[in-house]
Length: 224
Ligand code: 6GU
Image (cartoon, rainbow, N blue to C red):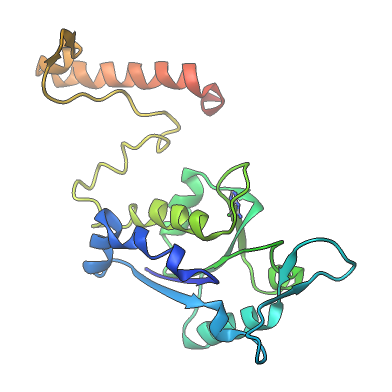
């Protein structure tokens, strides 16, 4: 998979890709990440990328021309399956959306800033608009990092234990059951006996029960 990220703040985005699972995925060649600084596609001597909104009102709007220049250059180089715009008024990200995007070959992610982008960018280029939740971030960069993490970990070969992404919370619309590790007794607090029993069918059943219990308690909406 190849991900091209268009941003005004590439420095805000680099570190998540320089550690742990994402770093390894890149090193193994399972994913390529390319950052494009929108400033490099700016207009005029002032390196302009945003302007006041027509009709008045506070806040700057990202202009269409730099974004068009950047997207057009990329589209000339290869085919893209999706051009995603990160915006708080997009569709809320969930595991199903991440699963779907993880199957794509080439995607562009455009990070919004200020009051957002000129509507014509959205009308002309964008195939999907994604939010990561009902709260406002200063820009789309952190949301883009969240999206990338959630899709990259699903790519075949990224996780060591191929099944571990399948048992994640949300993969079956259930929250994951509680987990424990050594010591089995910590200051008198014991691990559930069943987990030490070696009876794997029983352990599996216990985990299913706990997952259901937890989901019922915390996220009954997932069970509908
Ligand atoms: Cl994608 N962008 C911004 N700026 N804020 C958000 C968001 C995105 N998702 C939730 N809040």
